[in-house]
Length: 309
Image 1 (cartoon, one colour):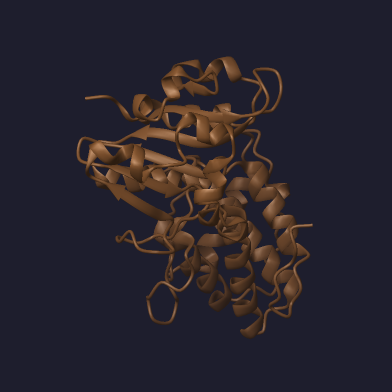
Image 2: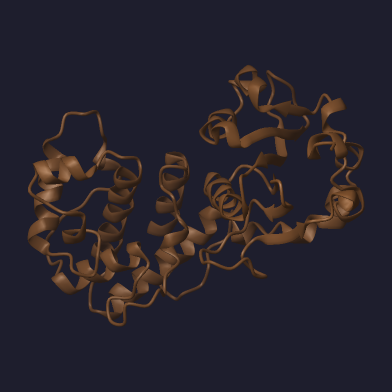
């Protein structure tokens, strides 16, 4: 049986970069993101540019063992925020996702970034019309499928929106804007360290702390202060100054609101109200986090979205 790459004509196109050749594009901003996907990535279809100029990723082609792994790949690519479409091939199906839209949860439903599942491999060319190499090159892809690429659903805007909602909740609890932003920013930094493995269970144990004492609705101010003191004393080259923080006037209620939100729970009911579960901070580029936080600092307090400009 012909592979998906062959069916779409990518194997005969100079614009398709196989995973093994990604290293030749080392100067491209997406190359290190592709490498993080490992053997699951088959390749990326590009438009414009070359090995020395910035080319634009359009379609990432991946391989999964099953539907569950396909969903995982979709989530990771959405967190990386570098390609608008994702095709995931398995023995049972070919799944098409928007790389710029994702919603956590067990079901692939409208609004989750899931677009199509193909189980009849004989109809790949018909159902995925527009994804053939020549139709990407001539722009037909965007005419047929462009409506599935919504910039407002990208990880940076998604994260910014959740930060704004969380900031408003803290202000409703009586915390002023500056302190609310500082507390939230600190948790962005802590989640970054946690997801990237720096705050490992072993390190927390060494500091006589548990994850639950900081990253849950049972978080305590004592544990939170202790963790930050240990981090400030570390000499591993980490720069916590990107998200500066002062503990003054932070109450346990405020801390638990933020800690629970970053875990995906509401501190009152235990039900998810903020979609922080969607984020994998080990995949979101640190540059993206920094830009999002800068925009969050300057966000209006009336609930209106700030413009991309």
